[in-house]
Length: 433
Ligand code: DLL
Image (cartoon, rainbow, N blue to C red):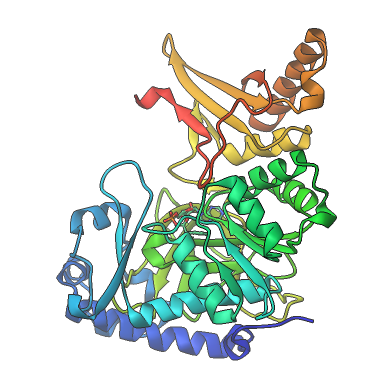
């Protein structure tokens, strides 16, 4: 039976959702105009006043906000409430430039945790569940967000944070954890380790996983589901908008419902900024209409995906986003060809390899090179050298078919690629160094 955390909202009519969005957008625009000089200036530069925004139909008139704006306004320039009303910050794990720092009032935290609670319930969670939160805690939003959501649902919450794999497995088994929240790459690693320990899926008490914070393919979902004996659900979010729970998957496991009572989503052409019709692939842009401390209007996520409205068997009416297919800024341009790491992952998993791989891009004699290192399974590792060479050849052909360019393939020993406890580092682009 389908359960909801906030049925009236999650299954509201489209007219009702639109009415909420119209009203909240107008209020939010007035709020940033009155309280954030940085926004007022951006609006003035476009010749806009709050009166020009009467509802969602006028959204396209507003200027975009980008990561560059966040850097320029760092740290307090986009805060819309007095600091005495703010109770928390969270920050991105970004390694380049200044980190993004997002601010929350208690109201913001409550709404964020509601969104995470919706995700847990959509994955089948109830107050009878034991939910192990193995996302990092601290500045990263994964741990705190799902921890709060798990409390709201009433699950017995195990705040393990990431790392210490042995202890993770001990708690899963000893406390009979039924829901696991972590990055998909860490879930795959936990699964791999439990398999090596001789545990079969029946001996693992988990029934569901809520995995996000990085791209993962359908093939990776299949592998994780099989090794852990669970249903694996996707969850999406970003620090700038609160954290996990901006969108989440339901029992249909086919796209993530965006929490449209809090966020308005648009898809734009990343080159021109033009809004694209529903069903088009493009860059996801969000407007947060309920955030108090750190409201963002038309924030460009850089994530490339597709939005679609359709009747969902789960009964939820909120629009769905596809799994992000890549980021407009993660997209590699190799010899002039656009390559998304997710395409490479799909090929590897289709060919029976694990998701332990690394993509190395370099420039030799003014020409780009692409190398994919992928771990062999233990069975392949015992093969003869000629068989390994044969496998490499097959993979080169499969990658060529998918990408249209030559990629050198190097099959490496099992366990030789460093495992990640948080977001995996898949791409090493030496051209930038
Ligand atoms: O990763 C928030 C989060 C935590 C989401 C836990 C889900 C679970 P940031 O560190 O700010 O926040 O990174 C945000 O991560 O723009 C996407 O590129 C990527 N991302 C997040 N969720 C997914 C997902 C958190 N389900 C950036 N699939 C986003 C693909 C994702 N990419």
